[in-house]
Length: 95
Figure: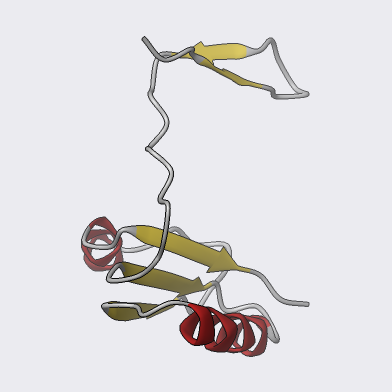
């Protein structure tokens, strides 16, 4: 049985969650990678550079690129469906 997560929040007591962590991938070969650009300045540049390096190292099956227009808003239901169809997600920030 997986050990529970301990979520630390400086504003209140710790919360113990019974959620199980996803299994780690051993490779990105033949996997679908989702990349979430949060809309901050330069996050697209950082993520494109990182993605280019990943593509040199791994044979990705597909890449799902998601552009959030506002970093303070959550992903939409459509974006969430796209994320659920991927094997791994990279979410980036800029500034």
